[in-house]
Length: 286
Image (cartoon, rainbow, N blue to C red; front, side, top):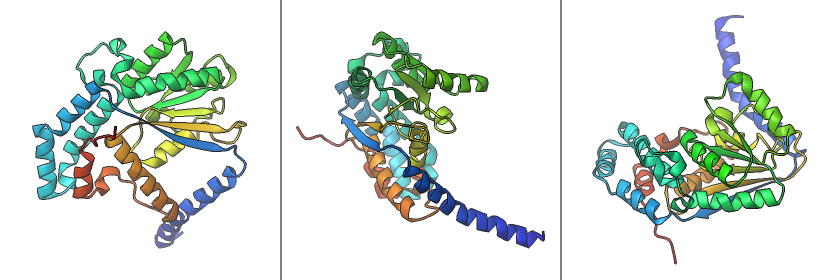
């Protein structure tokens, strides 16, 4: 085939593939059980709130925002990402900000989300449901795994350190052995390519900037072969960057549903005004 025709065919495939993928998803969805997505918001603990304010009021954060004001978002991307990561880490658990911390010392009462997770898992176990728990941070998974053992919640775990040969064994073990209440999964390592229809509950302890990645992770349970309704819980630290990013995700997802090829470059799309608004801690009503 002449090169110019080959290039034209490639461009055509690139243009129609999103339409094909969307049509396939729509066709499959009508045969799947119902999926309910619930946003569970929780306040930061006093310890988390203090650390959070220290970051957004720090000299480094102010210098970063000054750089954004003067030269735009693109020039400050490394600093922005570092600040985002620090704030999201505080939302997960404040002990994660301590260098060389002993993670088994992480207390439930120091993290709003960990306390909420305890309540959710009590309901899951009592209701004889089974859960996929996704988290971006393997250190946070260490803390959760420690507390699951303390709470007598049987679980499996898959993350980037899991040997490829063991992945299929873990999936089969979870799907076929109902003694396991939960499967702890690093979102990057297990958000795609796994069939985990043995679970009817999905919990996002934290969230990906790109809503498509969270949607892919949900689909590990909500897929062909699932016979039960699936409930998805999104744990959100109220008033923080987590809540603001998720609000933005909703808008992005709506646009993506309407416009094929919608950009998903995360914070690279942010205007200066949007970025500055992210680096605040909203006061909550009493």
